[in-house]
Length: 47
Image (cartoon, rainbow, N blue to C red):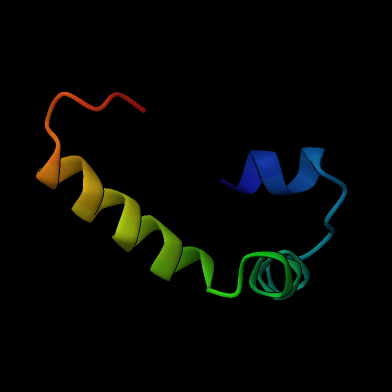
């Protein structure tokens, strides 16, 4: 995640988290948790 953050032009994790929350409406950790729930619900899904 850190590599993606820097490649996207963010210099700090807090800046990335703030923008992620602004765009998606949820924190990155909440987004990941929800994605995991969906994977468990549909084991055929590939990420």
